[in-house]
Image 1: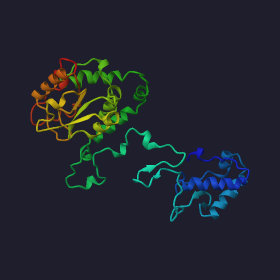
Image 2: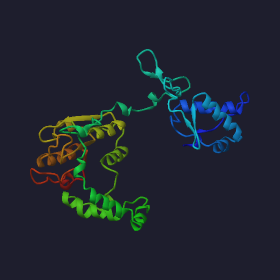
Image 3: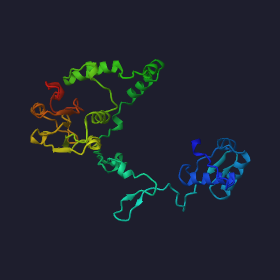
Image 4: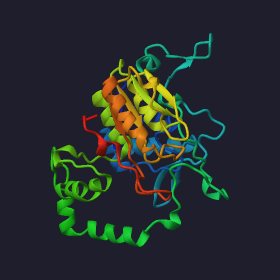
Length: 331
């Protein structure tokens, strides 16, 4: 429970007991104290409010009589379980329909959040993931795994090792502007060479995942005037990240070979591409298109944002080199 909820604005026109009761009623009806939650003891509440214990006792007992609280012997006072049944919960004043077009208009004295937001995230398109997808006979739900295939024993052992004293000391070390040097070295010497990529330690940045990496890129590179080409259909979350920064997005319809390289890429600043497994069609961008895309980038002076995920999961042919590995112009 948050003690900061309980404070009095002293009103000389009311008794302290009445003020405490009014404060608690407002907190309960506003939903800050859910039904069934416990209240502080007499002594603690008296200390928080700077009043006598007897005053708190009388206030609590009055709220029991009014049906807001229930007393449990040797346990304390709790918000009545059915206090909100048949009762409209009092809420802070908020936007109300303006009567003209149904749009929300701010109440007097409140900020107009609709005008302050550059974009409403709730109106963006997201992947549909039904909550009961595991009950589907064939759950073709993008981005979900089969938990029966998860290497639980290995994961448990990694967790055990990571919670040892020596590992914890290393994990809690603050590298400030640097990533874990051992992890960076493993990526540089073991993972990137498999994709034909040579990189120095200062060219590797550890992020929380692809979306975090793309968010950082958008923060650094994208302005309202930036023009970005995207695969269509494509990775929705990436489109949403870029849409927060610019509305100059150019969807390019993919075909059986993934992203076409043609005049639709003229005049852009960046192109986002998933060449190894196009999201969501899973097609692989052929080698000739990768080379054509690099040539187009030089011709039109744009940069390529390559999300080379799942390159190792190729069961039809040999993995195609990453676009970065055949880049000779730092594109």
